[in-house]
Image 1 (cartoon, helix red, strand yellow):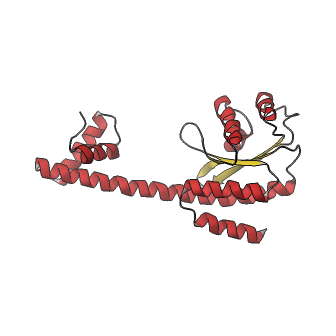
Image 2 (tube, one colour; image 1 turned 90 degrees about the vertical axis):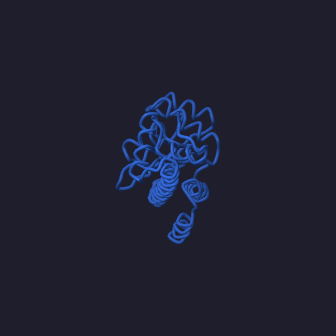
Image 3 (cartoon, rainbow, N blue to C red; image 1 turned 60 degrees about the vertical axis):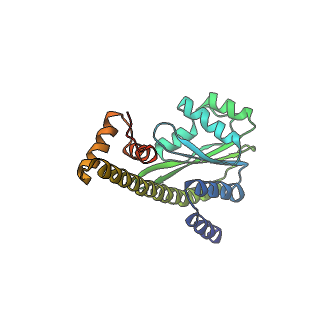
Amino acid sequence: MAEVFARLALELHDSGGVGETVEAVVQFALHALNCSHAGIALAARGRPEVPAATDPMVAEIYRWQMVGGCGPLVEAMRGHETVRVRDTAAEERWPDWAAKVLSLGVRSVLDVPLTTAAGSVGVLGLYSVVPNAFSADDEAIAAILARHASVAVATARNEQNMAQAVDARKLVGQAMGILMERYDVDSDQAFAILRRYSQDTNTKLRDVAERLINTRRLPH
């Protein structure tokens, strides 16, 4: 198992972004753990995102909880603790959710939080059509997988944010150059113009700059 996780760590390190990272995690879970389906929900502003699932049914199970604001996914994400549903046919904590999941043929659920020192990253969800499918060993392996996934996803997100920030700076720089040439202003004045348009139109500075570059005109 240590060798398997070592290979997974290398695969996650070589992933090209958040999408590839979470897809690698759910595929690993599907083959290494006693589950029929797997998925990942990532914490985001507003409603959590579901970037990877081995079956559309998983996204539907997540959606029910996001809309209702309750269920093992919500509990795991809020409490940062693993939540196990041994049998949806006998689950009493979330009866409405359990009934819907049971109607899809899912009997066992294991939701494992993805966390780092900075806070919640998301939840790894494991699903089985067999009741009492997840043992203590499965839970321990899932926790190790979640730890690898948490670091990999956080790293991929950080790299993605950095790339977007660099791209935004480039766009703003180009837009400032256009203003400096057209209106004979210095760099501080050009940036002030962009910022004013951004504030007045409630538009991101990056978007104002991109529009100016593409149309050679400032927003109305």
